[in-house]
Image: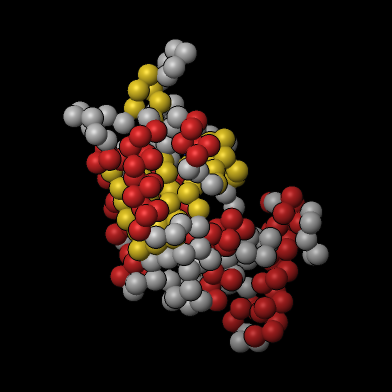
Length: 228
Ligand code: ADE
């Protein structure tokens, strides 16, 4: 999978992909992440990528030309499954979207800034609009990094133990069960006996029950359309 991220401040998230699971996935060749500085696509001598809004009002709007140039350049080199615009008025990102997008070959993430992009960018180039929640960030970069993280860790081979993504919260509309490690007894706070028993099927059953109880208590909305 290849992910191209278009931004006016790519440095903001450069370090994010240089560590931990993201780095491992990239180094192992499972995924390629390419950051593009939108200013490199501006023909303006000041490398300007924004302008005043027609009709007035506070805040600058990102102009269409540099964005069009960047997206067209990328699309001339390979096919992209989606051109995703990160925006608070997009569809809310969730594990299902992460699963779907992890099957893609190539993705473009366009990060908004200021008052956002000229509407014609959305009309002409964007195929999907994603929000990471009902709050407004100063730019789409962190949102793009959040989505890229959730997607990349699902790409086969990125996680050490393939099954660990399958037991994540949300993967089957259930929150993950509690986990424990050594010591088995911390100042009297003990690990549940069942986890020390070595009885695999009983442990699986216990984890499922814990998941279900936790989901009922914290996120009953997740259970509405499930068979549990
Ligand atoms: N850009 C600014 N706020 C955002 C949000 N909540 N989700 C995605 N992109 C954004």
